[in-house]
Image (cartoon, rainbow, N blue to C red; front, top):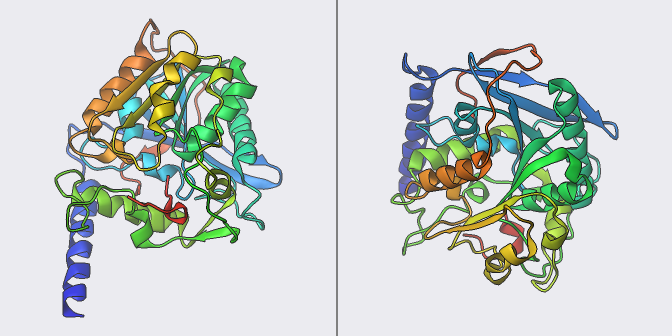
Length: 348
């Protein structure tokens, strides 16, 4: 018991230290503007927000779609230069994030099985339509992570006219293993939120791969935004036999980046390695040695991930920054952001 108390106290001290550092940004640290765009579909309020670099007027828009348990906060850990949201904002993007119905800051749903992959694709469609209307743009880039690759690709297949480029990060191309999901809602815990971080030989999260403060902030964000329960419709979709295809790569009509680590327990690498044969011209498959499911937050790999992502998104483009429709804004300085082997533990 004494050891557990000491461990908890240490974890709390690390989290408080990180939050203290975040609360007082350095004078030369970039500032960001944060906007929430009201959105509703099927009687459910959807949380759609946007982050831009203070003083910029980005022409490019990108929408990020989250995984099967935790919501879009997971793309923005405000510690050092880990945040994917802020990285993209510094590289000229208005970065949009959507919480699917029942997740995170979106409205609750009575039936946790309702927001399945196809339902989520329609939530994405509503968000894309709202973004295009607000910014005056006809198309945007789209990035999905984990289950978000299933939902984003289904939207892109149905509405290629709205998508400039598609990024499938840690793509769930096929079932991750047959498992009967009987509960409509998944019970979230602090420990569960950390399940996707790589472990050492003793079963502990490996500090050589993931900074302990990153883990604390990720889990804090999950507890803060997602709380105890998340819808299970997406989990029921992906907890099927590996022989079942979940993403029809041959039906994707826009340039697509498939990017992942080579140590992700959820991925079908045979399909990933042959993905380039099915994807359209201008597509790429990038596999980063050593990386796993939370590649974007793994210390040895996240810079490589960011660089490959930016290279794909920027390749062949000559965009100049220009003014976009102004939204009501306030400062964003420090929002909390927040290897399983069995299907119910799937996080992303």
